Amino acid sequence: GQQLNQSPQSMFIQEGEDVSMNCTSSSIFNTWLWYKQDPGEGPVLLIALYKAGELTSNGRLTAQFGITRKDSFLNISASIPSDVGIYFCAGQVQGSSNTGKLIFGQGTTLQVKP
Amino acid sequence: DAGVTQSPTHLIKTRGQQVTLRCSPKSGHDTVSWYQQALGQGPQFIFQYYEEEERQRGNFPDRFSGHQFPNYSSELNVNALLLGDSALYLCASSYGTDQETQYFGPGTRLLVL
Image (cartoon, rainbow over all chains, first blue to last red):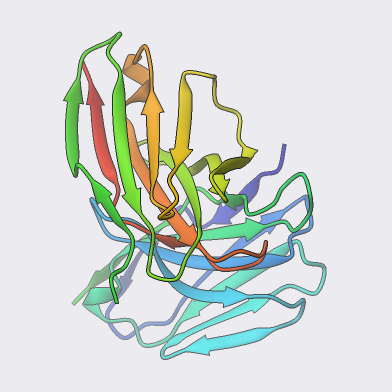
């Protein structure tokens, strides 16, 4: 079945540093999404990408939809303590047999040291 | 503008029991998807409801069933609970077409003893 490989699994960085995480898949996706989840909460959408090659920013966050449609990355610039949490990538396939289904990566746990 | 809401927030059940979880979608949304998230894992797709019908289903047994009401709210039912059903159950809503972004609720934490 479809799987997403997300890396790194965890990161421990100093406040102010930049962060980069990525997702790869053996399958093609039509949409890539990045979510952040705090403990005991549901995932919150950060960035949605709909076209191969698309580069989108949301404040200090930047994400790109890979040209092959099999990968995506998320960058966080100048990290702050409130960036702490678990970041998930998710891919979505458009088509009759996979309508609306999101496939999630395993998550990247980010810890920021003040 | 209310976001996705879920109830209850926490639930404790024993093996063999049945449970019903509820979800109200974000205002303007008509599609509801359910996900199971085990501890330390990413969410796993259970099924999706649109126009009161199950549109797509993930790799979950028939013990997992659902329903969507005319007001677009939804229920997830799990019968014959197993210890392995302990997880955070997430509801996500979206509007209509395939590529519309899904917004998640806070989840229901289910513990099966």
